[in-house]
Length: 133
Image (cartoon, rainbow, N blue to C red; front, top):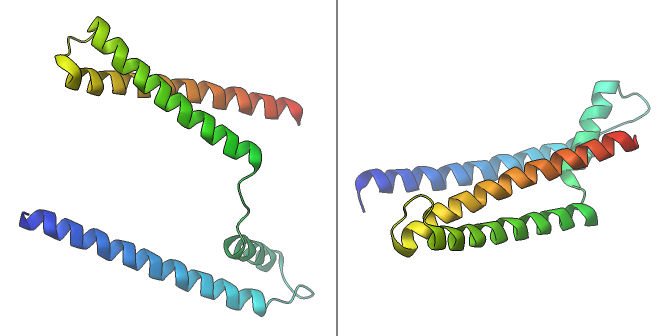
């Protein structure tokens, strides 16, 4: 392993540890804030801070509909990526050589197609929710 790789790995693990420590400190600060909170004399800013702390301490679970959308998007990514690989292997659209090129180029084209499709579905969903309001 080269020295630059070792330094990068060390810096990455240090950053992960520092992030975990910062998150735990933030959680402890919120816990102290929530315990000392008095809603009778709180200002609007203090109420917002309290609400943020409650959200941090007790995050809302994913709704069933959101989880379903995530599962569908994962399936779309896999399906379009696999379809892109076989299409590229069969038609050699970008002059790929063998399976390795087909996997790389077909996978990228399938991933791109799924991202465009996901964006379209997202925009349609936003339009529907806007109309329902």
